[in-house]
Amino acid sequence: MGNGGGGGGGSNTTVASSSSEEETRRRHAKRKCANGSLLDVFSCFSSDLKSIGAFVTMSCSEAEMDYPWTNIKIDGWLQLKRWLFLPDYTNPPLATQLIADFFQLLFACQQWRVFKYETNEKDHIYIQAGESNREIIYDNDVYKDNPTRDFVTKRRNWFDQIKYVIFMYSAWCVLSIVYLAGTTRISLLGLGYLIACFYFFWYGQDFLTKHVTVMVRIWTYLIYYCFAVIFIKACLQIVACIDILSIGCVIQQIFSVACITSDSSSSSC
Image 1 (spheres, rainbow, N blue to C red):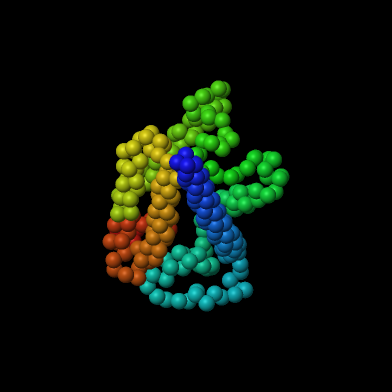
Image 2 (cartoon, helix red, strand yellow; image 1 turned 90 degrees about the vertical axis):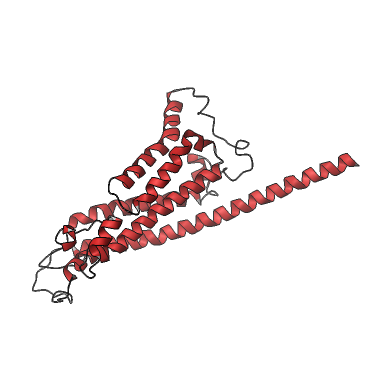
C-alpha cells in the first residue's frame, strides 16, 4: 500500500509539473503574439512616416503653396520645425536624415517576417524549410526534447567551431558595444549601461550556466533599458535642443542629448 501511495504521489507531481509547464508556455505564446501585433502597428506607423518624410523632401515651387507654419515667429520655432521635419522652402529638411529611418523600417519589416514564420507552426512549408520553432526553454528538462546536437562540448567539424564562437562570444561583443555607449559620452543615463556591464562581467562565462529563463529575463531587462534611454533622449531633445526653457544646456550636459541641428544655440553649451 505504501509503494502504491508513493507511486500515486509521483504521478501527481508529474501531472502538476506538466500542467505548470503548459501554462507557462501558453503565457509565453500570448506574450509573443502581443509583441507581434505591436510590431505590426509599429511597421505600419513607421512606413507611413517614411512616406510622409519622402514627400516632404520633394522640391516644390514657391508659387504653388504657402505652408501655414512659414510665417510663425516664436522663439525656438526654427529648431522645432527642423525637429518635426516640416517642409520649408527657405530651410528645407535634409533628405539624408531619412537614410537611418529607411534601415529602421527595413529591420522592423524583417523582424515582422520572423514573427510571421514563428506563428505559422501549422504550415508544413515553414516546418519543412527550417524545422519547428517551438521553444524548449520553458520545459522542465531543456535537454530531454532538444533536437539540436550538442556542438559546444562535441565539436566535430569547422562549422561546429564557428557556431561555438558565435554563441559563446557574441554576447560579449554586444556588452562591449554597451560599455562604449556608457563611456563614450558621460551622462546620467550612461550609468545604467555601466552597471549592466559590471553585472555581466562580474559573472563572466559563469553567466551562461544560469537557467535559460533567467538569462533571457536579464537580457530582456537590458533591452527594456535601451529602449527607455532612446525614448527619454528623443523626448529631451525638445527641451535641450529647442530654445524654450533656460535649462536646455543643463539637460543636454546631464543626459548627453545630441541635437539634430547645428544652428541651435544649445550647441554652444
